[in-house]
Amino acid sequence: MKKNMRLDDTLCVIPPETPLEGFAGLAVPVYRASTIVFPDAAAYRSRAARAPDGYSYGLSGTPTSWTLEGQLSAMHNAERAIIVPSGQAAISVPMLTLLKKGDHLLITDNVYSPVKEFARKILGDLGIETEFFDPTQITDLEARLQPGRTKLVWVESPGSTSMEVCDIPRISSLCRAAGAFLGCDNTWATGLLCKPLELGVDVVAEALTKYVGGALRYLVGSDHPP
Image (cartoon, rainbow, N blue to C red; front, side, top):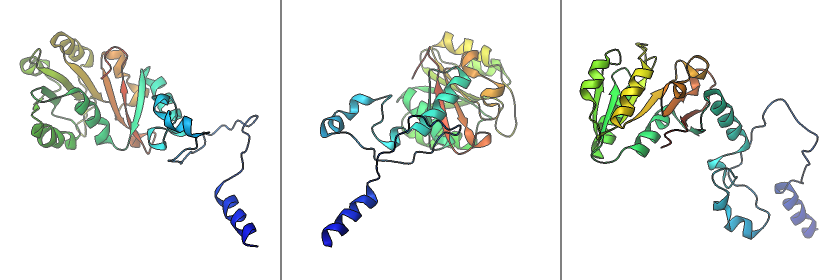
């Protein structure tokens, strides 16, 4: 009796293999697993070799999240889309990736307000200098650009709340001449109304809560990956 009980306990936590061949639903299934199953110990030990496109742990991607990333990447004609937990993270990740102590950062003064606080407090403590410029005045950007030292220019178009639209192609031209990357928060327009990567932007961040809902990501252009 005890032996059968132990078998039942095992059956409760280990589901039988169910074939998926021949079943193709229109909706993408929601995969929630964090820990995934490996066929043997050797496959587990070599799981790092699966990166970046193989599954090794739910936090690094599931079929659900990769489907969304692929769809968003196609929408923007991006090299890759990466989902992160929040809008602030979608902006912070490329900034922390591209900037280091002593670098100069330029941000439009109409950005999402937590970005300003992040730049002043977090990046400032890391030794990164931040200045803000008027997105409607190209001359203001030109006056603040420091070729060789300005590593990143960050714009939001349309801007948060105030909704200014800046001249992205012109700003891109100035950034390339100065040797700076250009990032853009494209939350309000989305890839349906604006494709910043095609206008010369290197990295795009969007809060999907506005239209898609529930996730955020940043996209990387193929010419200047971070």
